[in-house]
Amino acid sequence: MKTIGVLTSGGDAPGMNAALRAVVRTGIYNNIRMMGIKQGYEGLIEGNIDDMDLSSVADIVHRGGTILRTARSEEFMTDAGFEKALNVIDVFNIDGLVVLGGNGTFMGAKALCDAGIPTIGIPCTIDNDLAYTDYTIGFFTAVETVVEAISKIRDTSYSHGRTNIVEVMGRNCGDIALYSGLAGGAGSIIVPEIDYDIDKICEKSLRAKNRGKLHNIIILAEGVGNPYELAEILNEKTGLETKVTVLGYLQRGGTPTTIDRIMASEMGRKAIELLIQNRTNKVLGIKCNNIFDMDITEALSMKKIFDIDMYKTADILSL
Image (tube, helix red, strand yellow):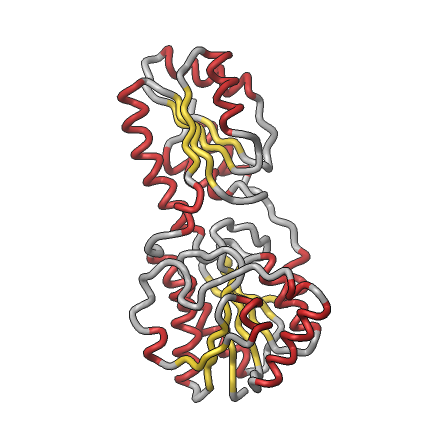
């Protein structure tokens, strides 16, 4: 293994830079030529590739986003685009790849594995929607961002006696909503994994008001429903003034938390070591606070299990 390329693809996640730093520095430590592929699989197709040295990844462990930038590539998913990517890998004499991203990125990594390119995946997505690992890099930072926002929204909701619906990211996974809702003391948490009853939410909101509570926070995972329509329903059924806050891309930015930096650093080192040992076509994850590797095909075939116990805890505590 003489030359290893690294790329970030899909949505950015806090901690990607920490992982890049670990990948590049571990490679250099092992006398491997490291190459940075800019703008994900699109950059791979276009040959947008540069050598990386120690200075390339200096002073980035604390930075959000990704210095390699990222993109979603429809061309890479075509036969012609994929062949271009394979040709570029051959031209640059790249012996192995480390790819950072989420489910879509890993699907691309699997295609490269199937084509005979030694590849290791590092899970970087705020959604925490990869079933094989307890947590993904960027998730905890996103949760902290949401909890901080909830605290600020609560201040103004209290002052005006309002209900506020806070929409958070997560695609088809409710983990950001669940974790931030529990930590932020939300009155109700609406996630795609659990059917919700609008009448029960209204009842809980009125019960809270009747006992003197001057604010009410409802966390809504994106994709479950329209937050503005939900606000109208709450207004009509309860008479409570209800506002909407859509946090959006705010959740992807910011300085990564300590745990995200540590996970990223450990996984970055491990990715290079796996390639050196010729233990390829794998993804990295964390279980019970231990970093582990798994076959990429097996990892992608697993189904995410929602934490019902934590949801029950949040429901009980929000009486």
